[in-house]
Length: 183
Image (cartoon, rainbow, N blue to C red; front, top):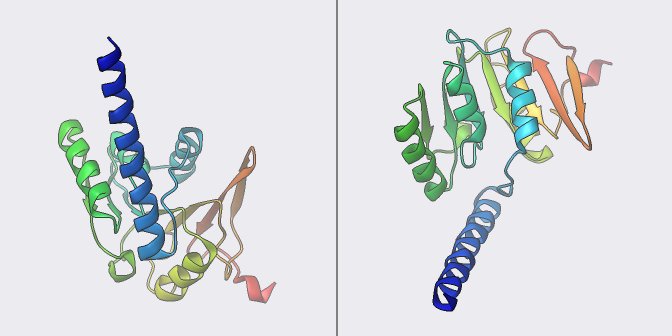
């Protein structure tokens, strides 16, 4: 019995070490750490997105793919971008078991084609949010919703702010908001 308990402790410590490496790799590669979005916030983000099976979505910096899977379960088609390959492998394997209309890409989302996307999910630090808008703001389809957990797009005014405890979810609609510098 003691050997079994020691075995479980070793497995748990190994898993924690591997998970810590993912956090460090993500921070080193992107300047943004891997921090999973809490389930209640995922549910609210999905609700605010008003997804249907006809809508296409993307999650920028999807981590382990929690939002992508939740959206896929509604029948929405989309993808998640993540730089950390083991997280993409994990998400892809999990999707093979669930068989959802989603995919995971081990790519830098700044090189993605975001035209004709209906909803963009993100949980990116302020510097990445600013760069996101500078890179994609003029090419996004009018009406595209951007749902951001915790961080604003500094160049825009949100259409809606949903407060959940200490967290905020910002909702933007491309072409529907006034640039922040004009207020």
